[in-house]
Length: 236
Image 1 (spheres, rainbow, N blue to C red):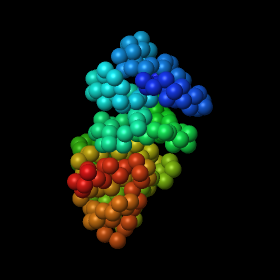
Image 2 (cartoon, rainbow, N blue to C red):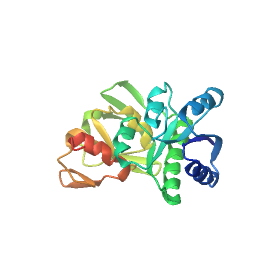
Image 3 (tube, rainbow, N blue to C red):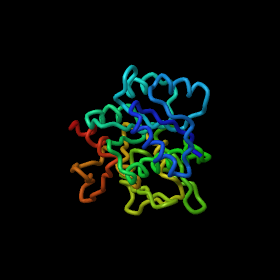
Image 4 (cartoon, one colour):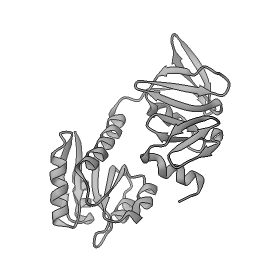
């Protein structure tokens, strides 16, 4: 169960948020607050996994509230102003919703938070490693060495991943969640562009609005990762 709080200074918006939260069985609403200072008091007393947060509020704004936290739970921003989207992205929020929020878009954001919550709760799988330049993965009955700068891209296939290498025409296939291998890779050298793809930045040859090219290979960029591509290319 994901323990959450809702924060919005507009009574009708807060009531709608409470109603939407009640529709999802994996959410438990701990408190509803009309300002960030009230929410701070709640968080001192209660364990909170997820915050639904309005940005434009009197006193302490939503963004200021996020910046004040030393330990941040998951945060879904809800606002009428699209101009704050990049600020939210830079503060590593889970999702960003524009008012008026449709039920299906709200559920999509909550499902994303649940996926992240489940990943954090699950026991972490380990990858054998001696340094940051390589690691070992299980393949059949062997441990296969993967050199990180040899990785062109990684493809997720349900419970398995395919590691496509520069040195081999045949990808390495191993049973492992994408999140586990993503945590092993250096953020400066790799980029998540889709729930099913992580790419080696050095191998990118071209970028379009919704896709990335590695030579003749075209990989999709999902909406959740387009801001990361914009930051990479410098087009904000």
